[in-house]
Length: 186
Image (cartoon, rainbow, N blue to C red; front, side, top):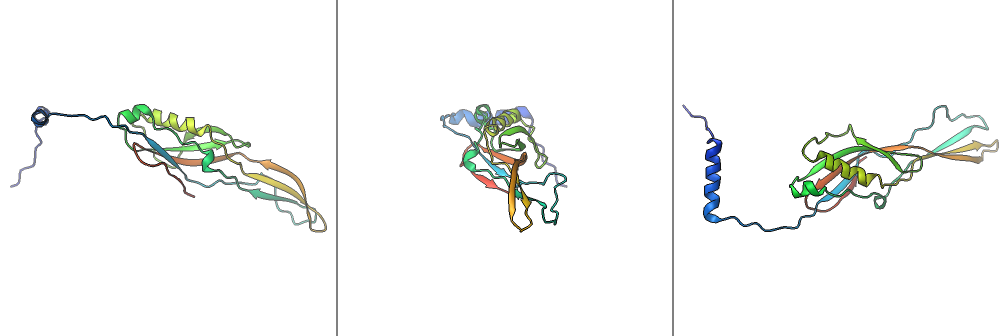
């Protein structure tokens, strides 16, 4: 009959670890580590026509063109790996957020996203604050609607442009070392 392995008690483990360190000594070398972060947009920018706007086929119908919003990576400041977490060796962390933008393309809110599993571990507040600080400096070109009046001759007369608020789901990946990357995931 096979016997189950029973690990030694905690004091015995500590004694074994101490006994292996004492004869060899312990040397620490300071290594400069710089944390990195990256992000990926999880959902493309989307537009929806305002309620009540339809494409009426009458000769003088109101026509609406939907122009999607866009962002540029140069307009997206990456968060800084939190110094306390870096010093503690927190390792790789992912932060999932939904970013809301107003009609001018400026962020109005950063909240946890339902698209990913939140990290409630140690330093989660530090990582969340780092994301919030960076994202509140972002700007995008918001989606907008362009309204035209269709003339009897088939031409279109420009009426107005209306910018729309937008939201993005984004995942930020923090690594204790490595390169910063950005990847768009539709």
